Length: 228
Figure (cartoon, one colour):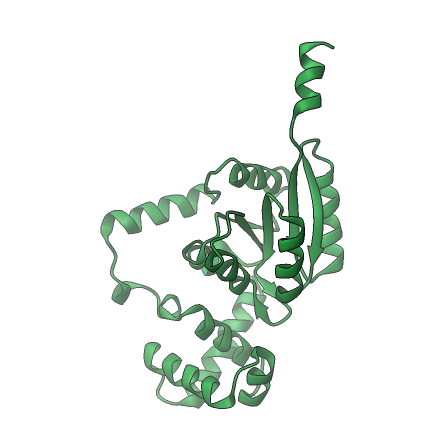
C-alpha cells in the first residue's frame, strides 16, 4: 500500500451532530457535511431534550446548534452541554447577525458562531476549525472582542440588551413574538410568577417605565431582527 493510500485509510472520520428544527435546512447541512471525506453526520434533533439524549448515545466530536429551536433559544443547549462538563465542542449556526448573539453564545460555552448565510466553504471551515480546538468567529467579531477586552469595557457601558441573562433575553424575545405571560410560562415550563419576575428584571435592567413600554420595545426588537 502506498503512503498516500495508507494515510487516507487511517484518516479518522469525525462525527457531527446537528440540532436544527428546520427539516430542509437540516437536510441541506447534513448533505454538505457528508460530502467531506473526513466528516460524517451521526444524528440530528429538532429540540433540546431529544438532542441531549441522542448526543449522549452517539458521543459526537462536535455539535452544531441553531440559535432558535422553535421558540426556545439554542443557547440553553450550549449551556446545558457546558454544565455537564462535556468535552464535546459546540458551534452555533444562526440566521441572526453575529452582533446580536455571538458574544452571548461564546460566554455560554460555544466554541464558534457562523451565520447560515455564509458560503458553504466557510461553514465547513468553521466546523473543522472548532474540531481542531480553535475558536471560530468572523474577523470583524474577533477584532471587536479583542478591543472590548483591551479597553476593559464595563457592563454599564454595554448595550442594554447585552445586560439581560440568557433566560431574560428568551422571555424578551417571546414577548416580542406576541406571547402573553401565561403562554411564555407554558412554553418555558415555568410558573407565571417566575415569568413575571423575569419581566420585572428586564424592566429594571433596560429602564422601561412600565410593561406597555417593555412590550412595545420587545416587538420592535423582534421585528427588526426578523427583517435582517
